[in-house]
Amino acid sequence: MVFDIGKATTYIQSNTTPPGARVARNSTGQAGYDPPCPGGSPHKYRITVYALDAVLGRALPAAPQLLPTWTMIAAHVIAPGTLTVTACPAAGLGQPVPACKPATPRR
Image 1: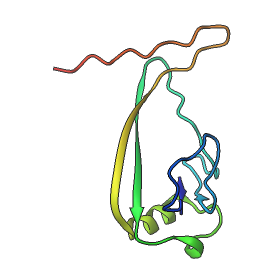
Image 2: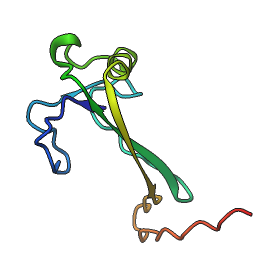
Image 3: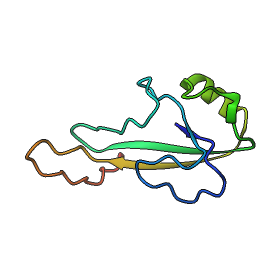
Image 4: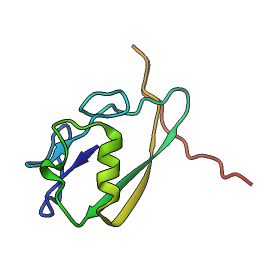
């Protein structure tokens, strides 16, 4: 989870943290990104961004735990945005990268 992203930020380069932004610990307990790793078939992931009415700044320690970070964010949300993406399984060693196929609509 990345927070305190400046309002002037319009693009975030891959594998970087925007200037002034901070990173909370992820579900593995590490401060950093743990990418999705689907196995077998495409998986959907929901990415949510929140507009806050405050910079959290020093209200949280360096590399804070998830619960205190979520609690602090929840108190300052003024608008959410959500994007759903599909991640395809990674190719095995020496095997081609599988193509994601559209899911069959459920009836």
